[in-house]
Image 1 (cartoon, rainbow, N blue to C red):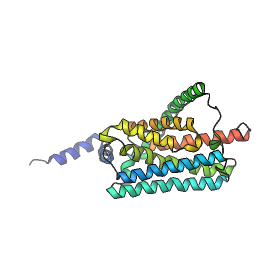
Image 2: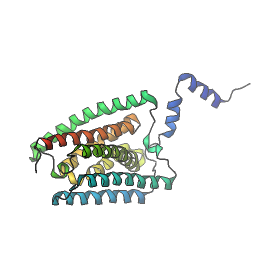
Image 3: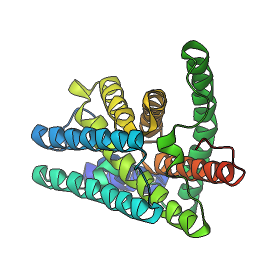
Image 4: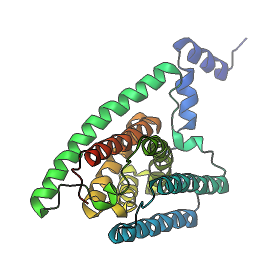
Length: 265
């Protein structure tokens, strides 16, 4: 009796211990295949830029984060609303959110792998960003101190720090899905990933208007590096971990600097 090829393939997969890879491959949607309508993408980009402009104006007027808890709560809500808007666009095309998450690395081994990816990436990314920061300072004599828009949102108390952690985790999850999982795919015309990397990274930088032009440029570079991490690992989880940790680390540094009175007033 002839055994069907499909059964042979399933048997070989089981024998080689690759069921996870086979199942995961089905969840990786090739770049170039749009996951939402263009009008939806345009709406999200306009929302991001409008919010960035508003935060930039607030930072200039000194009204950003007058009340930390209110600002943190509003930002957390904004992050999840953005994710909800992304989900609506996916539903229009019948695409599942898990498609953007990439290949699942299941179990403790997979989680450890993602933390390792994130840790190595973070060290390398901070080295690159650090060198670029020095270059910007030397070429344009930009201030080496954090912009007022950034120092204004620095946590000041233990309660602030606790909510800051929640904000950082929300940003790590929601922004990686939005910028790397959604926008990068939408702009990878003809399956050309580099186009999606460039456009989504520029939008990522531009969406942080309150941090000033120099940090917007640096964040665009960081966005591109996070895109490469996503493409390399085929999973958003390492980027989520690295993104959340970077924000947490920045908050801890700013809180310490504020405590020792080294931040500009």
